[in-house]
Image 1 (spheres, helix red, strand yellow):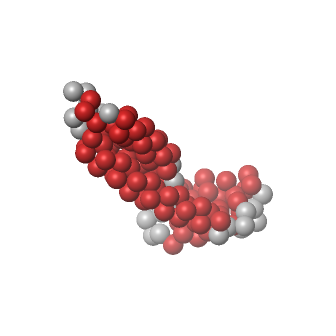
Image 2 (cartoon, helix red, strand yellow):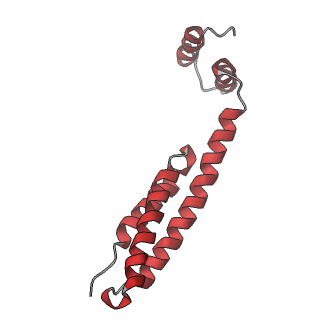
Image 3 (cartoon, helix red, strand yellow):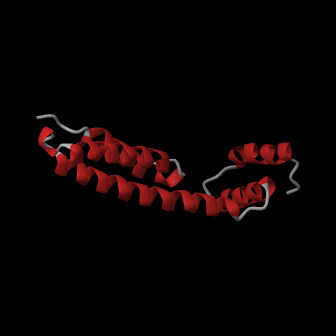
Length: 123
């Protein structure tokens, strides 16, 4: 009996969950789901050839959960950046946030001020 490749699906699903905060996990989760669907098609064509059809069904569920979490993360990232009208508004927000942190020194803030100057922002 052959085995379906559940390992790739699980690894890509975990990568999808780990990368959900930056919005890139969606890509890994979609790939995991596509692999799981294709593997399950092979299983359903002839279940007697494969010994781990149930495991692949479970891997597909994990891939779907990973995709949902990753899409939520992607939407969150898009919503965060959509609140800023332009780069200068984002830079101002970032500098204000850094200035409120008592552990941030003026030396650490200087690259942010330089960035604002490069973008032509009036602070």
